[in-house]
Amino acid sequence: MAFVTQEPPEMRLEHPPLPDAASVALFLDIDGTLLDFARHWNEVVVDAAIGPLLASLERRFGGAIALISGRPVEQIDALFDCSRMAVAALHGAYLRDGEGVVLASTQEANAMDALRQRARDLVMNLPGALVEDKPNAIALHSRTAPELAAQLRLIANDLRAHAGPDYELLAGNNVIELRQLGTDKGTALRRLMQIRQFAGRVPLMVGDDITDERAFSAARALGGSGIIVGERRPTLAQYALATPADARAWLSRVAQTSHSNLDEAIR
Image 1: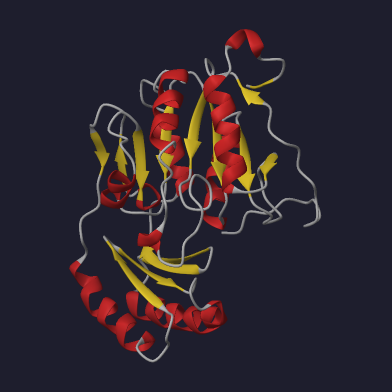
Image 2: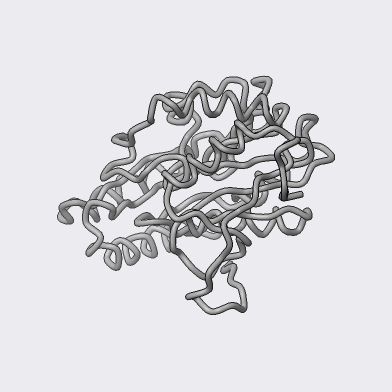
């Protein structure tokens, strides 16, 4: 399902105002939003200031903050000290609240074993293409060789044809992923909005990728808003930040600003 606006691709979005942390729930994508992209998903650099920043945001929003990512939860936990934060991993197939309670978890699908081997065989002669195994998903990465994107899409279509009706393809930034149906970032955002720390607030989603559009859509449907990081257009986000560095700087302002200093707020 594609999410687009009626505005032209060259539309210019405003810089986001500071949110009212007492009434907003904050959702943060990781790669391309909190962190700069790297050639390999295991080579991202986590600045030493990000951990304290997330802790400050957790206090500022009274626990109504979540990391929402396509990464497995084990990778997220290895990147950040986020034991006091809600997490939606694998596009929401895994959900954990801010108290460490697992709300949803996916099991490895044995039916994917043959698909994983097929994926490795098909990319074997494509230097630079990477196959990432996830629970119930296979991601084909072209970040180190963007010229292979079209070929990887053909391979993904082949895998989808062999996988059957319970699977779908999800395209992202230099990646295309075969995964089981039933979860996406929009569904994850809606589910997290029902837990105690988030209830009664409006969602604010910050993300960069096509996969974040479903979360932007869900946030808007719940009376909230979205912030896109980067130049990708069109989008359902109402505000924009140019780079992950700008996103981190904006989040630092959010963490340090008191209610009395809020001239304009996202509510």
